Length: 147
Image (cartoon, rainbow, N blue to C red; front, side, top):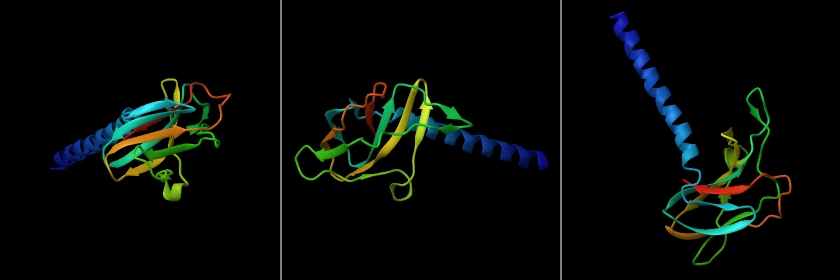
């Protein structure tokens, strides 16, 4: 009986661990599902209703020390999302509680920082514009638009 409970516990642990790993890697794959734009730049994407994530990416590995990532989107970044039909820019909600958090990652020669999420209420075409000045120290800066 004890061996059966241990076996069930190990199986449950492996299933939960597999799910967590799947979610972490799927988040990286969906970062540019709708497109990407160079900084500065502009593009129009067609998206369904729901959340749309905006992520800043550079093609370099950020320096790290004991799992701390010293990389973030520049303060001068100016991203706007507007319906192609016109209107006011949509609100970009930053990561974490009240936009005060962060979501950074480095892998495969690139560093990413989640800018925020836009809630799309009406499916359709939206124009994403990044109008900050040139970033002289950035290596291939890009805005990824994804799920």
